[in-house]
Length: 511
Ligand code: BG6
Image (cartoon, rainbow, N blue to C red; front, side, top):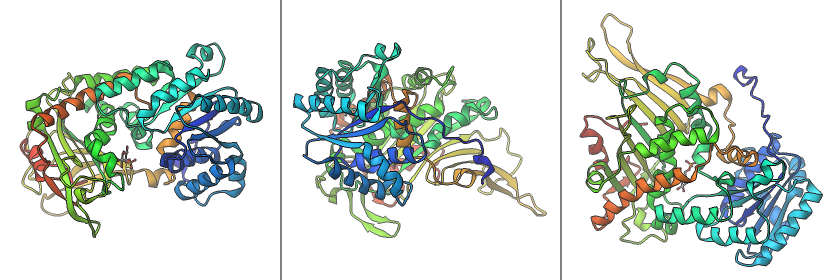
């Protein structure tokens, strides 16, 4: 038994409830959602009154739907093989309702079905509606739920009655205006306290650990600001391409797919002030303040501070891979960016003048997400570093893979001469806690069942994120959306991205 695991008790079960998944035939349901519920069940984190109801257009029996979900869990669960005894119990709580989202009958059928589940499975009238559907369908679904009387106002729960919540998947719109429309649509039926917008990065263990690392240790916070930090680098690199999602990617591109949500959330958690508590709004207030402090990307700033790229043919881990424009459903002259690097400034007292260099891309050299805080050099170099300069301390927080935290510092090599060498003090999650960490969706689903919204994005956060990104797109449109420079698949992006950092006398880390 690893001693560090002592005391880690999985003691949080959600409230009794029925989870209704709209878009149950989609990939997300069988790849992520049902495997996450299965794993919550295995770790005894599910309430005893619990049921999953899939809703989709296709006619299907409960048995057919269960068989599909079993196959999904067998393939995608982090625990393999599936436990047959546990599954046979678990699958009894999985049922299916067929219907189109525009037909009122679907919601009437659903209401009768949920009433039955309250009686048969003790789901206590609590409802979690999960919208695993494209945003264009949100409107119909929330209207249908409302008119079938399936939505209880929040005060019912506050007064001891049942709750209703809605979980919304990304993409949450494609710009500020569309995000506002979606928010208004949802707000026509749900109170903000009932809305759980998913950014799955916030469910990752290592992302949650950022808050613990920063605010449960006294060592780093005193130096976490412009006096000591030279700059910050945030990298969200993937080695995969668009993986059959060409159609989606042609509409979205990496800036909207990754930067607007996941990367900006990482930036917020790195830059935010200590919240007054861990209550959802206390944490989200601080994140919103960071977003409001971002120096707006005026057109001239975009030209100077934002670099796009698109992957060309190349080799990833030894395999030849096609160019983005050769992927299925991608236009042969596509101008969509699959890489973006930005120099971002957080204009407040803590971070004034400290650049945040951020980058995200597909088909890069390897899959790695990390936040690296580079501290200032010593004011006077007594020693000559190996490269002739003065070395810098770096704190690298590795979000994935090989989750961990490494602190680089300079030491003297043993010997008669004073030769300096950079070394790393390395903490690895796998070694300390074992490698079977819960998936992001497990934490997020459990939190939504418990009504804990800290790890979900609030309306104003999403809108601030879009407002920032919209300006970048305005500038790109103004330059007639010139084609992005190409980079070889398997590289670290176009050379212009290196220049962006080199101009300031710095360079990207090779993570
Ligand atoms: C999703 C994006 O939100 O995040 C995908 O739509 C991307 O394009 C994925 O591949 C990355 O998530 P993770 O958890 O694999 O880093």
